[in-house]
Amino acid sequence: MDNEFLDKDQLSAKNSASEEKKKKKKVVQKKEEKNKKPSAFVQILNGEFLTKEFVLNNLNFIFFLLLLLLLVVGKGYYGKQLSDDVTKTQDALNEITSEYFESKARLEENTRRMVLVEELEATGLKETVNPTKVIRINKSRKTREQQ
Image 1 (spheres, one colour):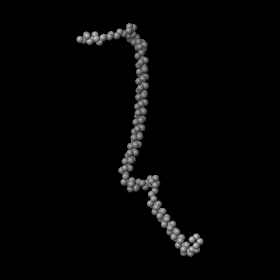
Image 2 (tube, one colour; image 1 turned 30 degrees about the vertical axis):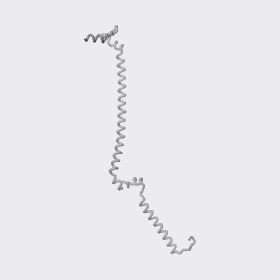
Image 3 (cartoon, rainbow, N blue to C red; image 1 turned 60 degrees about the vertical axis):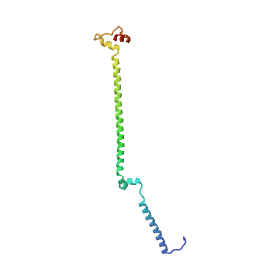
Image 4 (spheres, helix red, strand yellow; image 1 turned 180 degrees about the vertical axis):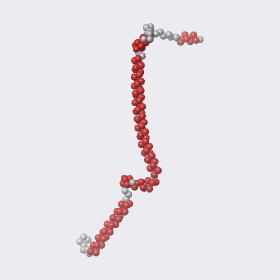
């Protein structure tokens, strides 16, 4: 067929047939493009997904998900606040504990025997030289006396 002789009429008919085939292909491609849905990412960027029937039917579920997201964010902030409060309370406790040990050390230093003797000399009180005596009562003697 490559070397065949063709009339103008045949040639124009052949060209018009090939053009019709090309037009049909273009029409089919356009229909396929119309039927072909754009990707979800493109729909989100365009905002088309908001107008779809699926979204409208599931609006309650979407609001529920948004509520859950808000709760998760709120929980994060609440946890951070609790953590800060625990840290502040721990710092205050450490400060009070150090003050307690400092006061206890001062008390022990001020109530030593020699310091007390020196301070009480001005009032006329003196330290005893005689050792203290302990009086012990036997339990057996105590029970006999009670009977």
